[in-house]
Image: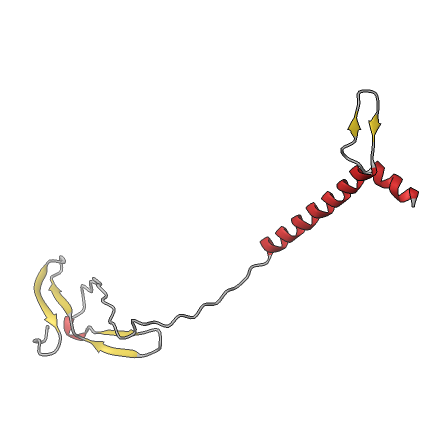
Length: 129
C-alpha cells in the first residue's frame, strides 16, 4: 500500500516548493489524478457532443390553412401568344390547381419588349390574343 502512496506522491504536479527542495504530498498526488480524470472526462464528453448531432423533429399544426398565399411573378415570353399561357400550382399537401386564371395580368409585347396591350385574365375577362 505504501508503494501506491509513494507513486501518488510522485504524481504531485504542484509540490510545495522551497528554494532548496521539493515536498511532494499524498494529497497533491490525489488532487492531480482526480483533476486529470475530470479533465479527460470533460474533454471526451464535449468531443462526443461535438461529433454526434441530435436530430429533433417538430410537428406544428398550420392554423392558417384556409388562407390563400398571394404570389407576385413577372415572366416574359417574347415569342408566345398570351392565349396559350396558363398557370398550374400544387400545394404542399399535393392538391393541384390547374389553369389558374384569376388575378393574372397578361401584357402583349412587341419585338422590342414594349407593351402593346394589357388585360386582366380571369372569369368574364375577354380573351387576350
